[in-house]
Amino acid sequence: MRALPLAIVWLMVQSAFGQCNASRLAGTLVIASGGREAVERFVQLAGGPGASIVFIPTAASSLKSDSGVIWNPDDAGGAAREAFERDTLKRFGLTRLTILHTRDRHTANSQTFVASIRASQGVWFSGGNSGRLAAAYLGTRTQREFEALLARGGVIGGESAGAIIQGSYTVRGRPDKPVLMVKSHERGFGFVANVAINPHLSAQKRENELVTIVDRYPKLLGIGIDDDTGLVVKSDRAEVFGLGRVAIYDNRKHQDVWYFWLRPGDHFDLCRLSVVDGKPAN
Image (cartoon, rainbow, N blue to C red; front, side, top):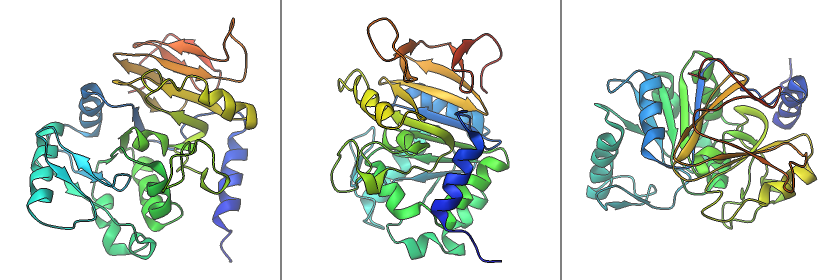
């Protein structure tokens, strides 16, 4: 039987979920705008310090570790990579870590490249530009392995661009220029259906950006995340954690603005679009 084009499959998945903005897979998502707690939650959910974790730096052109090491992911080896890997192990509190990176879609489609994802309990996406993640992995075997990881109950986390890509709509998705909306660069991995995610909300004064996006695409739910803040998402339930707030854009006016705020500890039903009492998402 001939395979359906990826775009058609993507539309079918979104339609199947209708207006529900739930994660469609069994695993857990950590969607963050930076902060220590995001890393701690991710590692805990993945199984603790001994968990097998894959770190994907593809969104970045360069990364700076906590100790000041600057590393370009396109530099495959050398002292900078080794130092960055040591610092990342320390930052995550892990005993082992695999750094996985390519910008070549042929490589991203190979069995060899995805082997570490298949053996992992969690995947973490770095910050940078979400369009670079989409350009390298969207529609490839690598994306399918991300989904397989979630289907078997694993954890995917990410900060900044690594948060954006987890939604179905990608803000600033053009790899070479961070324009808010670009027609040919709008699709994310869709781990959460019908959602656009915008990090660094208050610090970068982005409160009105998702108003524009949801006005253009009324079926989307907008989620804006302050720095040092995030969400743990499992199925249709999201829990807010961190130091700031999360804004929800549901295409309705709330007093004098087009969004409302969630605070740390709030649990939010992504289908009913309401704050709920109950168990945390994790």
